[in-house]
Image (cartoon, rainbow over all chains, first blue to last red):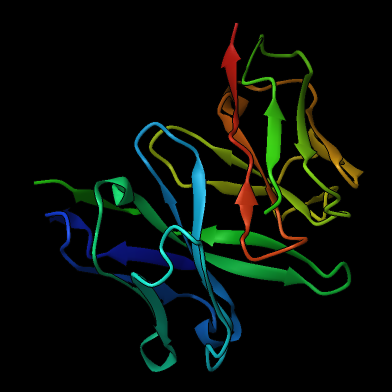
Length: 124
Length: 108
């Protein structure tokens, strides 16, 4: 079964750090581009970060997290990570990892596999 | 940054009816638009990619159309399990990847 399982969320004080993990199974993880997407309580979806497949040499961030968050991957461990530093109250959200599927004939993308999410709460 | 505006914010319909959800982009995204469904307490699920292509396992009652700046998700013959929040997402000019604010489809 194709699956993504996030972990590492919790309660952290403003200015603190947290590292999220996403364990992949059921597919060849190294072949896929990956994303982190978050959802604040009662709000919509917000893309956070992207990492390319294989070596992960291409990385992008939303402006709201640039300079504070770092995405990485370990293909040997079939895992995706999000290191979050200098956390703010507005970072409070459920964080999802999502697999990118590129539909080659159309050059179109879709996030076709999602984890169940891990909750990050930033509060004093 | 491309802004996606979804309408209506809430749509109240009955099972068996047809739902029409709109997504408008602030500039052309060609056909690089996807639709997602999210139920309470669950992760989003990919419905449509490339504006009009159903993802694996998505029932035929879901269809997408449009290109450029105006897109539509149509759900024909609503089933009880279709009542959820729907998001559009663009991958034309990225980063950033952007989502619409969502349309809540509720039972009338």
